Length: 183
Image (tube, rainbow, N blue to C red):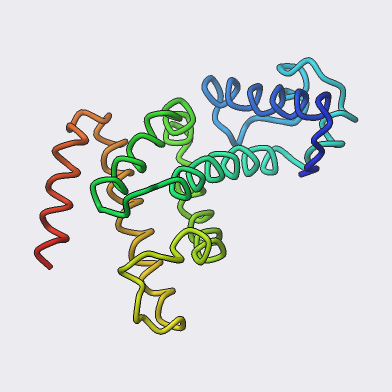
């Protein structure tokens, strides 16, 4: 993906991303072609390829944008309590619910999990420089804590999404916090 900040390029990228998600809402992802994205976005082929390499690249860019916003929420976190952590996680999903519903509908939620597994270890030091639960953990072993956290949190979110978000997030949060504090 081209990371241009030119307003025209930014607008084109958003048009392409939106077109892909509109199509994914109506058509299985694997059946969508670049040609259909071009038609839906009302852009020229060269505009698409100036910004993206493929439809997978478009999808990856949307996932990366979600994760950037998600991580920004943690950087501004003033309190590192589990309650605040879970509030951020749930509110990030709710804020982007269409994104998650469409990924779920297309059986692509695993892509967010895979990206989390790649990106979080890279940004861990920035996000958790003062996190008490990593104090005293050998840096070689911290990757296991990171993997554990990603898997646990992501599976909770997948369960909640699969349940249609019917279970009250405050109830889920309280059960998780209680469970984790008693370990």
